[in-house]
Image 1 (tube, rainbow, N blue to C red):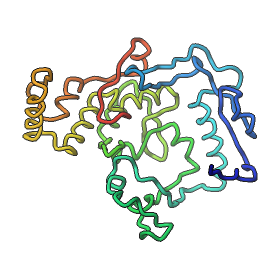
Image 2: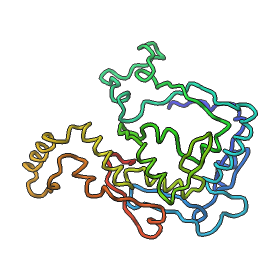
Image 3: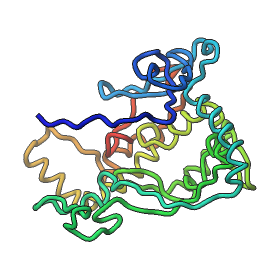
Length: 292
């Protein structure tokens, strides 16, 4: 049996935001009370079925307890107050990031003879190829509180997504911001979508996810069909091959010339909000990856 000795010493500070006084809080220096079920607005899902879960607040949190969203919003305000004294202007720093799942950096890793380790001198260290990626980012610590309750600018000026499926978010962002129900916030001379409340954050997630927005789903499948080549003549050939094996037990949409039209076309106008799933159970859409 192999084992490693536990590290000696103690963390300088350990803080826990928890709804229960279980094992973790007993080892913490500070315990922050979190709102329990039916005391906060939130959404979640499970792999056991395809329904979206709203967690509506039936009562207010007890005493000093806060919802997860409000707790971190409170901390961001205090953090920004302190940061204004030490980091009044944005600072740049080097940040490492892992080779994301289904990205070229991960897929291109040689595996026939095992992954080489640059730390052991087996290969040259090349960020993004033989080790994690490195990038330079700007940290605006003095405005962390404003950043927490707003979306942007990366969402509206760049691409978003994961698993190699990246979409241009500019028009989606602007369309959402221009809707009557959308609250906005302005700071540093720019206007952004506001997320002051947990419900606003939930609605933004629902609007930008391919599982709950038909247009986003369609665009994701369009990206995927070009990754796989399943569009146009190739898609027609693939359908014939499937038909030759399974016959009439398999049905395809008439006029569909690729994965996007076949799978996401019928639901392209589908949208759902937090109030929608509170009023009536709703299922998520079929997506090209399990995380939407």
